[in-house]
Length: 252
Image 1 (cartoon, rainbow, N blue to C red):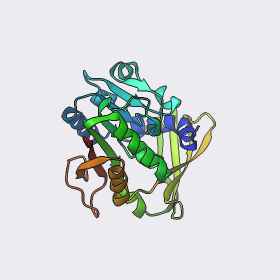
Image 2 (spheres, one colour):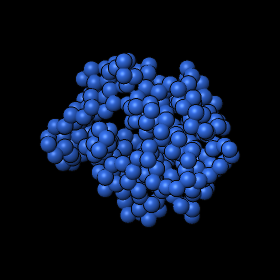
Image 3 (cartoon, rainbow, N blue to C red):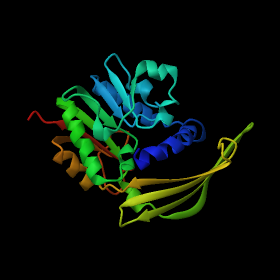
Image 4 (tube, one colour):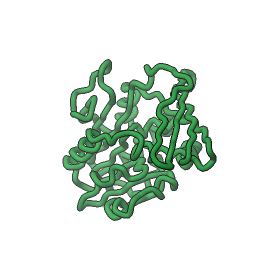
């Protein structure tokens, strides 16, 4: 098992608690992906489907596949999500589908940053190009601003209490410029942590806009549009909070 997959086996349930309970729902994100799916209604795959948070907005009458490497994440899927989306355990670097079989593939929510090795990211883009029909679309979301985020040490992100439930996160953020990663050293405690305390180090690749676009094009995909936020606004290097790329497999 790849180290990043093993990490999500441990971190996935806590991440899901945070997304569902600690942090308010991101309605803008859900609306964005709902609109994106309406624009691309064919046979679809979500890479890095997590706990199924987008299943309700991605599933439609066409085949929709949720690809996720973590078994712990799949255990968090609701029966309704499983009825909407076909769950498949696997990696984007080895898509378990024949060539030219999908109309739309998306990799949302900074999932690409979890693939630390650039060559493996290139392999993923090549797999996407292989599996898409000619003219099929690929959508990727990344955060180019990880590179400029300030380092922090032992910052309490939250201390959540409700009835008998509690969860506390203290986090240290640092950069490793030699490896081109940002590291989140997270220390969890509370009633929802079976061990009482749990330390997890999440490493994410630093991916510039230029690198991402180059590698997507090199895989045989043409860039269709570049957006900077969920309002479909144009991308601006200085001010956009995210980088949203839509690409298309060429006919050749």
